[in-house]
Length: 211
Length: 187
Image 1 (spheres, chains in turn green, purple):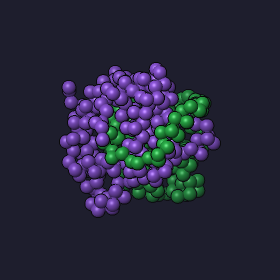
Image 2 (cartoon, chains in turn cyan, green):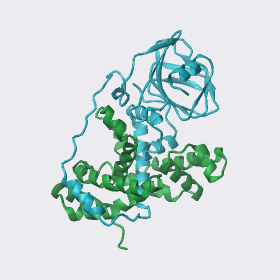
Image 3 (cartoon, chains in turn green, yellow):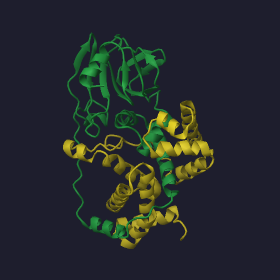
Image 4 (cartoon, one colour):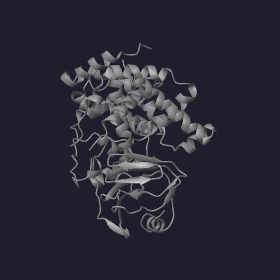
């Protein structure tokens, strides 16, 4: 895969580095990072900024026995580390470590599945697989939508996106993505805030996700 | 109060912890970092007791992972910051993690290898970031800090600071772009 052309905003990478981003967008950004050395380098810079902020904090007062209790803990044996097993090696890391249910048809040429995050069962994260040359549903959002292209590509009024690209769509934007003609387009998408949808995908979300 | 330890002091102490399980060196690291991690976590929305728990867990991880610290990758402060950050994320999903047996912490999975672009010397990167942060306007700095300390959407930050949403967005983007511009300058 070539280096991606579309990246998360710096501000999003900053929030990722700080751990101050919702679980759904975090998975989308993490999946982008796995394939994007440029963004990984930026994350390191923002982590350095975190280190600078940490150094500059006014120290809090800890309980008097804080150090003694920490020493007692380091003397206890370390718990075993869980090494995750890939569930679907065809998917990029870290998405491959998540439980990915079977695709379900939802409209002609469009299949979907919900990605359930054990750490945030309420997160709105889905994958869509759209057949070559097919349209994805027209939709707007009330929060930012984060999309990572996993395979294939699509075009909307704003540009053309291919595997490895990450797209942030602001609230109040509507778009009608059209999958490229040369193969299925697979995307991972997460929403901050509730979805405002038109037509069948609205019914789908209401039925399965309850929003 | 004694002078703040230098980056090299911290590296020496951490090496002593890694090689000799040196408790005095660990004590110095604890004295500097534990109260600051706790303060950071309080700013991020945890109560005093939760924040102290994260600080303590962070220091336990510092002890256990000291041998994995690579001074070429990050300064000690940055490394401690990433440990505390991961524990902050982890704390919110402890029960879920136990149920699922999934330990996906971040993009740092065994499948991802670093490129040359990422391997800028850590000390150089940290010095540049410090310079960049010193040039931020107070307004940019406050939005940057809010981005770091809260997972609040911009709309909420705008309400709390009583400024328009567009202003929050442009300040956050400017602050981040400024840091990045300085970082990406040739040395």
